[in-house]
Length: 257
Image (cartoon, rainbow, N blue to C red; front, side, top):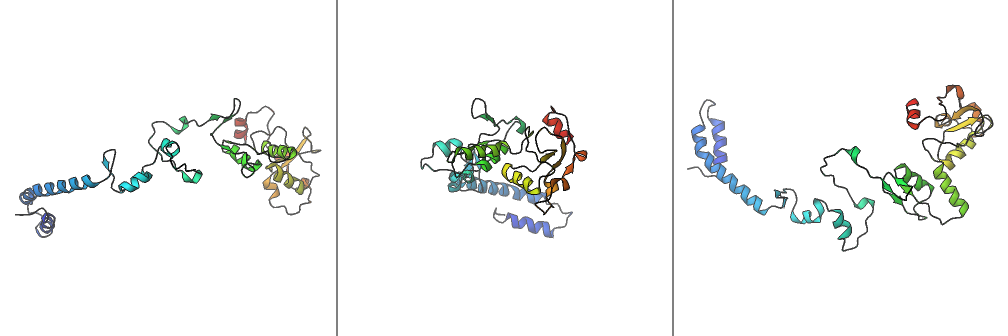
């Protein structure tokens, strides 16, 4: 008689010491019923004591861990059924991905802030003096949201903060700040610090609408140490520029570049 507890040892001994041509089928037929019965008994006992999710056993997590949010909470459980009135910050929440039956290109997160202002993503930074000034508003806009600059400042300073945002990088700068060949590197660095861009067109008299004679960018200024050197000494001349006629579309300009 072979017990279910010893059948594994018996099988190992048989496989090790019997010749390969020896038929084990008769002996295996004798052991197999005990093996199946014992295995089913083990599985039934384990399943009775295990946590299940949607009817399936959850081997790694116990009940306490599961109730703590191991499988995630719904938005309603987090924000509506928040009996402790806990406040959350960005780092407190992690979005758990689930199965979707559509492409990412079909996802639209755009939202209207006002009747005429539509955001790519529904994020707005607070108009507080410790939160949103020009730098925060610029980065919010680059990410598809919007920053509302606080008003705890003079009207002139408020207008200056708004101008910094409006003058920051965008597709087409229709009224760029220009310099002349007689300006210095220091003049260019001042514009970069105040307006956030370093690509500055150089015209004959430093005014918009004058003849374009060149341009300067970070590539031109990175290795220049003399702050008083004239722009004409290191600018990229007009002959080396890639230009287009007025009215070109942004997509066409990007292809041209």
